[in-house]
Structure formats: structure tokens, C-alpha cells
Image (cartoon, rainbow, N blue to C red):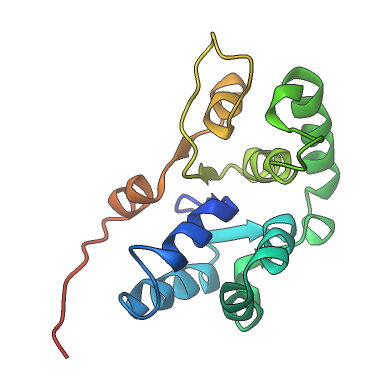
Length: 166
């Protein structure tokens, strides 16, 4: 089976409001939706909720592309995902800042990818061992879960972008 990719919310939010905005790169969003239909790219329902709370236009796009979202409760490995979330929070509590309500979905993104053998895709950078905080890449490496950024995703999938004049 081809590699699956589990997207962090920041991948969608940054692309939507930046270099892959629908006005500039509509084919990027078509491509994402098609890969989701194929089962190659997905987000957890936690990511959907995070986007729904912050971004109306992107939330609307996700609403019309439900194939992108995987609910943990619907997964065959739902219990395993929950166990992995507990393990992540036990061994890497610095991943989530509950006081600032920041990164609360990150353990679910990592656990979901870990349980189904997917690669995590995030815009976060690795902080390294001397930092008191942890980002997604730090936790992924701690548990040997593969990760990349959005540009790595495109490279790994062999995608080349082209420009069209209208």
C-alpha cells in the first residue's frame, strides 16, 4: 500500500492563507481532495474542529470534502490510537500547553499516524533535546514516527507544480 499522510492543521491553514491559497493554486486543493478520496492523505477530526474554530473559508472547504477527515472512533484501530495518545502525553507532556490551549490536537495527529503507519505532515520545526518544550517533530522522532513538512510531502509524492496564465 502507498504511504499515507496525516496532516496537521497548520499545513492546511498556512497553505490556504499563503502560497497555495485557492485564488492562486486551486489545483493544489483539487489534488488534496483527490488524494483524500484515494485514502492517501487525511486529517483527524481534531484538526477539523481546530480549523472550524478558526477559519470560516477553509472550514467550508473541509465541509464539502469529508473524505479528508478520519474519525478516531470510526477507525479499526481507535482504541490503539487512544492508547498512543496516552503514551504520548505520559512521555512527552511538553507537547501541549493547556494553559494557552495550544497544540491540544497534536497528540491525536501523531497517535493517529503512528497507529495506521502514516507519515505526519506539519509546518512545525524540531526544537531539539535541549529545549524544555517539544514540537510534533520532536515527539515523532521520540516514538520513531515518520514526519515531513508540506514540501517534503510534495517531493515524496513526486508532485511538480506549474504556472498558468489566465
